[in-house]
Length: 286
Image (cartoon, rainbow, N blue to C red):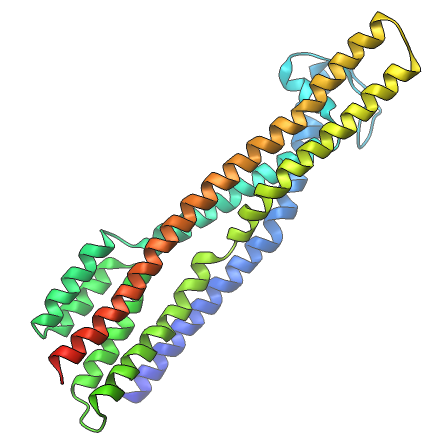
């Protein structure tokens, strides 16, 4: 029996390590891939020669196209910061999808409060097996933690060597061990959303400042009404950086708050499940 429990715990830890390695791979590759994709979109989609009246066919890495056709093409003239901002936006989308899948899976099926009430009902009737069956139905982080605690709960019922306090401590320890496998995966990669929320705005402002510098430099090199027209166009193009930065930052902040709220709900459910097990055991098996 002991060997089975050790094997089960080892399998759970192995699963947690595999999930962590997969998440680490995403966090390492995704930002670089997204910035590269941002450059390709900026260079070959937005900066396609067909989008300009005076394309630079031999521009290489950063062609000096002129005469954008339409507002979408003007974004290209915002400068080299634009592909970085596009990459940041793609990074946000990547981690929003990744966190959405992870948090949705961790939330499980059904309402967490209702699940805990069902477990409490079965424990009050001293039917631990039905409580474990409810955990299998829940299929989330709360269910996994509760299931680990219930197996220890069931083991402590038949244990005649330990005192009630020692049994409760064993149940608490089992719940804490199960929790350490679940919580890190919930909070991982949120740092990218919080970081981009701050950095994207600054990058947008940097791009705008660089565009303004170029515009005023052009104004200083020439004069007349044509120079003023080019200045106004340059300012308009530079502001695309600000728009991209603020938009990316807004999406990051909103989704970060959405995920932290859902994670807090799951964390509260985990804490409540541990409290439920210890209180139930203390009252039922004094």
